[in-house]
Image (cartoon, rainbow, N blue to C red):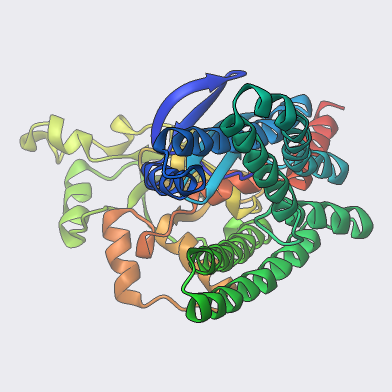
Length: 416
């Protein structure tokens, strides 16, 4: 199970309303599995292909077990994707309780174990019909049992890791502690897989050793990604907008003319010009963009004032300085201007927020210092530096059980 974005590849069908995708890497494994299984049937490619296809159908059913349990608990399932190392079901969020997470994690191995049982029962009658069919059923029963046991290994991203996460979450009351514990277990299993895979491959030259090495390497990468995601989630949860606020704005009096606005712009030729807010006597009147300079004839620039063309501040995308940073990320994703007006608790402007400043605050929290030229380049582009994509991370934060519970509590408090 994964709360990653929707599956990539070719959509082949829908199961219980869930799109099923096939990643291009799956075709390579299908061919390879067909060749390997064919050797068990005296080189018969038809039975080899049938066994490979039914094995991947078993993987789909395994993921469908996770998905149906998720749907039963009210969690939306985006897709199921078959790829080189098996299958993955993409969900919008984790279940809201540790016991819910435990049920979802256990559903997949339970399906595989049931398949193994029914296939084992079917071996004898199928053998009477056709000996090769009985052998296919026996191979699939063994592989489904292996799939169930392998997935129960206690480390993320395996189902056993999800079970460890749920149990630690239940015992400690901390989902984050559960994730960290299960991820560390996944790292240990990954290193064991790499070491054992290298040993078997060098000693026997078997494909199994190479496959174990690949699985171990994948587990290490998944564990590293999970820890990075956890660190980013924590930063976006605990940092506030005021920790990354900048001041990409200018303040002018409403009585100034369009000529004054033009001269100010010429003195600061920037690819992403600052916002211009209008203030008089300590009272904020509105803002003005550069449209009047394009629409009004130059001859009237000395006559027409900024007040005549001002727009209300409420038309600018804004956010409170006390809002958590993940909310700012989502607001920036919705903003066409790539900038937010930051307001204090009284609703008055105190600065602005853009992606580079937000990224700098997050990386500083992670003890990483971004070079100034890199930040300036990102500021000119209105983008995150280093291609850092915080939008999907913020979406996962918004879907965390504790965040959703806090939001519901806040909404209830406001309603009262």
